[in-house]
Amino acid sequence: MNRPKVVFKGTRDGLLLRLDGSVPFGELLSQLRQRLQMSANFYQGGQVRVEWGGRQVLESERRELERVMAEHGLVLADSATPGPVSDGGAREKAQSPAGTELVPNGPAAGETRPDPARTLYVRRTLRSGQRLRYDGHVVIMGDVHPGAEVVAAGDVVVLGRLQGVVHAGSNGDRRAVVVALVFEPMQLRIAELISRAPDDASPPRGPEQAEIRGEQIVVRPLLD
Image (cartoon, rainbow, N blue to C red; front, side, top):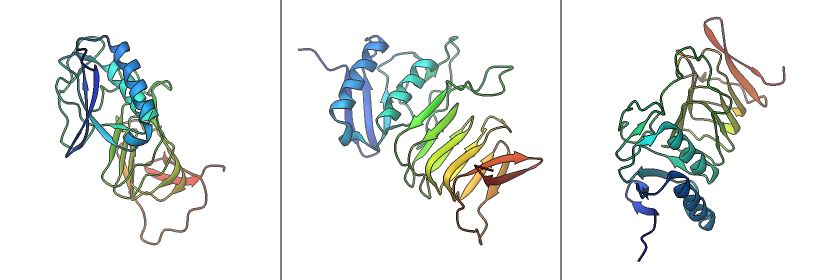
């Protein structure tokens, strides 16, 4: 009897995805897409830990898995062993702190901005307690609720209401921006600068963008 190569299992901490480490990665992705398409509503909005089945994971493979998950409204949480290795073969950290996602390696030497192709599209709302980290740009097609957190090496764009915590330019990129249709973050950080929502904040004025000017974070209407 053939054992399934892609298995989802419910645990107290959320969903666990078990992958057969002996199967080519492209075949695993194909089977995963089929599984998610068949049960899209069942898995929608969950966080998923991954057991790689002993595979030595390339950074590019982990990013591709992350993209497939995001296409179906899932967030890739911290991976069970082993951790990813870079495409050059150097080993990364195997674990991240409990409750957070692993962050792939930062930009290579001389790279100042994430490649525009390294953009993660998340088609869902992030709810309280959920944290999303990505080594590139992030576009969220939904809201970011209070208590949710987004950390990105590049820009963060929220096509909805931003009320949680967001950190753009997490690798020190001061050119990173944060854009939201409704801009009400609890805490805003770009590179090393931090800004908190004022107690007497005025009502949202429509789509807004936050960026660094001088040594402070400035929020302005997007269409100015």
